[in-house]
Image 1 (tube, one colour):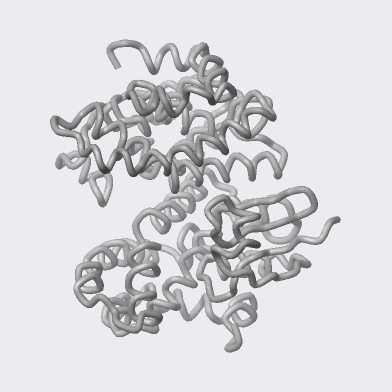
Image 2: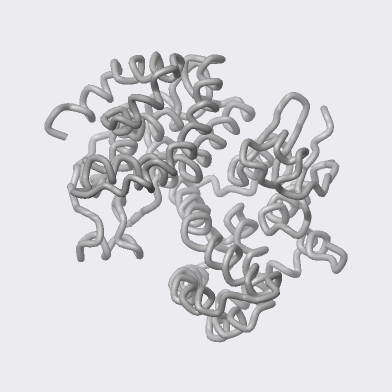
Length: 204
Length: 204
């Protein structure tokens, strides 16, 4: 079997998603911490983004494609529900995260608050409402089951956890997650997993 | 088996994607032409968007979740490759379309050019470059096989076809697709399918 290499800085929430999936499946892989928009990143992704994955002749980008490929190509516990309606619920949350959560949570609140020297306070303020709504939906979802799509973890949990872990590091996140008790218990459950202990270790 | 209802105006490219999948699988379904942001749409989608799908107790939104559910839940020819690397290629193109193509093609060029009384010419002009790049990638992809992910059609073909059909109706689209001979042959092949003849019939 050719060596699988995951490319992308471990600071990226989407790289962390792939790392969680690889660790959960116990795949033997190499991690290359390429940062976005470098010549190396642009060689592997037409828009220079991360994560990307190489596996023999396969070169793959787009997080959903990568995490599905990891689950489909390696043995070990399946990270997708078997039941079509639960699988659809997982796919719905994968899309909800990418369409409605990643941008306001990571590209606005987290990056402005944790990385910008002069955060755009108006932008942050105007984004709070965009984050409140999907968090309320997620909290309602997690009232019904221990994990997002099922009673067991799935790719949806690995996509959303790294973003909420970053969100919690901001004052806005602390406020937003104050009353979402189902999300908070889920974060604790997720963070106790062996894969999380590896991926979120302090030097990452 | 409960009745499956697809909700959403047939003018929407993403509704057409679901209609193509339903017709390809020969599923018995009802079509409710709800438009976005109406009270009916908001009852079924937290952001009032279309398409949505109801099937017994299942209420589903997000196009990727809907088309995967249609393929997973009904018998008939599979609309996804079996091979993990081809499946990954399909998933990559589903994400490329939603992340890099839907907004510039549909939300900017098509809507500005075909629906706006005073199109924003600067916005259209600045968007051309964003469309050129994924079209070039798609043309290269279709040089290697008859369909996007495989030698047979898959969900990726049904996601991208309705958007390019709309793009072709604009002057910008005609220019952009002038030299993409592989895409043009693929559009012809796709449009000759029975599912396309039903979905793109003149009164839709």
